[in-house]
Amino acid sequence: MSFVARRLPSHRGPAAWADILGPGPRFDRLDQALTADIAVIGGGFAGLSAARRVMQLDPSLRVVLLEAGRIAEGASGRNSGFMIDLPHDLASDDYAGAGDDTTLTRLNRQAIDFARDAVAEYDIPPDFFDPAGKVNGAATAKGDAHNRSYAKHLADLAEPSEWLDAQAMQELTGSRHYRSGLYTPGTVMLQPAGYVRGLAQGINRVAQIFENTPVLSVSQAGAAWVLKTPKGRVTAPRVITAVNGHLESFGIARGRLVQLFLFASMTEPLGPEARAAMGGADRWGVTPSDPMGTTMRRIDAGQGGHHIVTRTAAVVRPGLVPTPRDMRRAARQHRAKFDQRFPALNGVKQAYSWGGHLCLSLNGVAHAREIAPGLYSACVQNGLGTARGTLTGIAAAERALGQTSAITEYFDAEADLKRLPPQPFAALGANAYLRWKEWQAGAE
Image (tube, rainbow, N blue to C red; front, side, top):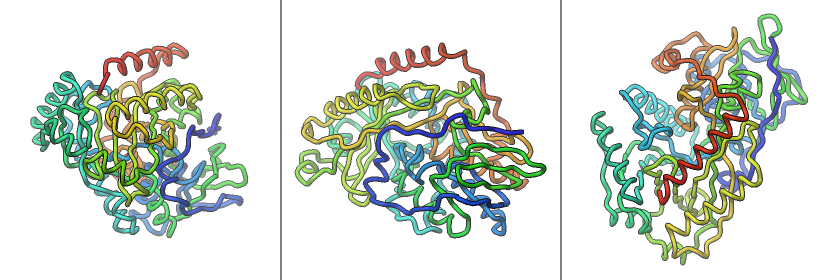
């Protein structure tokens, strides 16, 4: 049995979260043949969490992790850094979704605790892991109604939230754009590149991490698997693939994965005059009341300078690479959304724009299972890569070591991924739907 990569990860735009921190740790490129007890493909939230969980369960095992690019400069370093504990259904009008979300909320909090413990164990700067909570911001009457619906859903789950009026939102963000907000305390705001770098450095004390080392194929050789890379190979009886949507690149789950890109821009560092003109708190995160609206986040000097991140615009690209036109369109939208919220800062430049790769399934389930004897997946995070990626990584590690837990049981109970309509109709239909939903979201 063999799985050959038909494509390798490719990213558009700079890795801004890493860039503002300056040069990070460097890991070797694999240029030899190695053996391991467990090999992990992918150095993002899922892969690093899997490696750490393996070492927690059996420190005697030799773990080798292979990352195709630079650590923290792939998809894991291109998200907005919201590690959310509560129900967060991107397909719902108000995130609430349907049914009893207590199980997933409890598991998300396990993921957050896992990350918190790693921060302490590996001396990751606390600024990179900020348990500040987040706000759902509403700019319109429709958005306000979405927030009230979400607040009711949370109350039914006995989860706390705090209603913020327009004045409170202005005091927090410095913007008059929002008419209300719903604060929930359980979200952790990550500096994603800083957290992932710290996690990798800590894991590399015991395991071996190689970067700029893409896996070209995974082939069965007797009771072992052989991972071929451009200049080396790793032989291991157990392999965890934590490549999210690139699972499809290896021919697995083909025709079942929605390859989605969300785009973001980050301002140049805000000087004293800009910060004074803006007002508001130094650090906050606002998700839109409508999931297809605009996420805004402000970070302070402890995370690489004062910046504002704007995130909106989505496109489906089955080829796993957005186009230059996609990038230009998104950057224009970010400029307009930023100016709409912060007219006093219209001279502030957007220093970075980038695309972040997400992977979804039609029915919102992950691909976290045993693909073949000794080959495990921790993929398809459905746009919730920080918490869900951590959970799928933990589940894959536990499965590989014959362990069961509430996390493995949750993923075991999930349905199979639904099949998509044939291409190009699936992508055409999805992109038309996204444009309509963006139009509906409006000022949100």
